[in-house]
Image 1 (cartoon, rainbow, N blue to C red):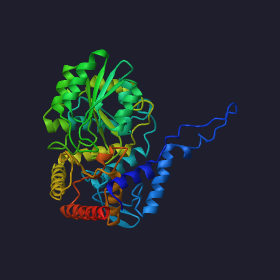
Image 2 (image 1 turned 90 degrees about the vertical axis):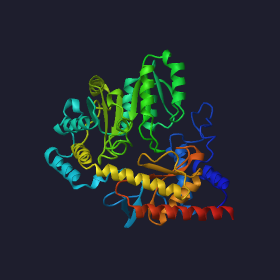
Image 3 (image 1 turned 180 degrees about the vertical axis):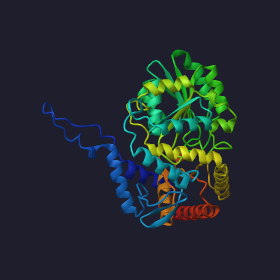
Image 4 (image 1 turned 30 degrees about the vertical axis):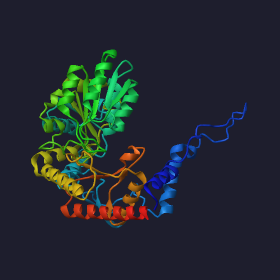
Length: 442
């Protein structure tokens, strides 16, 4: 293995390649023929990246960690192809996906409703379990009203795309999830990003730009899915009021995790949820299911219920088993507060053990996402592969998802993980990294 600079060049060359000529297609004058078949998907730049990744994994003898099939339950451990792994790449934060009460609720729903919602909710897909789940969410988190959807990603895209338009301003944190970015693209609004969690910069941008647009929306994550740090909600509420904006908070990774009882950013900061115009969440993280939801004021949610495409309009409703599982999971979380407490203790313990071993975990430590910063994409790939070899799954996050200088391994911590697993994992990572560094310096 070469130096870090060599590793970076290998990564760029092998995985990204040189695509500077990809869009330079020679056309024979008058014939309509091209020297490359542009309709062949294998000639696209992104497909070439996939091929080069496959080739690099094979040549370097590394384990390919992507699309690993699993059998059985996913918790702190997972089984793939007969081998058991300690898993840090699952969202089952509270261990509820395997809870018998949650599974039983899904089974009963299958007996009552079958497997399919049947249609969009407006025209035949509405079921009692949808209303029950939405009321459970309102009771738990304090929303005036709530709607559930078939997917968290789609919830952001379609909600932002519907509410905002060409004469409006969308201003979001630079680390906002891709679903928020794509929603802003769909809206065709003026789009501005502010430096991550830099609310002085946000204030300056609002002062300079807000007056030029009709509607304005600030979009942030509650707990950031790459870095694990939290947004400053009191400051955001103050800014959105002063500049007359809507505030949308994506709580996908903070519900069930942040706050004394897992009630998210509002509980953590002591802010009334009614101060937030739109709160988005997913059912696929702490709540042991799949789908998304939006909470907010009655008028806002009623508007979205009727007209937002892909929320309840033009989209088949949430499957009944998914709704029933999430409904049961939320109730168990509220009844068994020890689950959130144990998760938060595990986050603190993993973070402390990582720091003691000299790892940089950024500003994480208050959510279930804990990165170990490495600063080199190829190094992250090699470490991910070496960990997998000894029975540990922790995926790399690398360029272009994050800047090259911020490449990392990302660990999702759950209430199911144990102290022994943390120690084994971090000691192993430290040893492998030391060996890698020694080889690089040889």
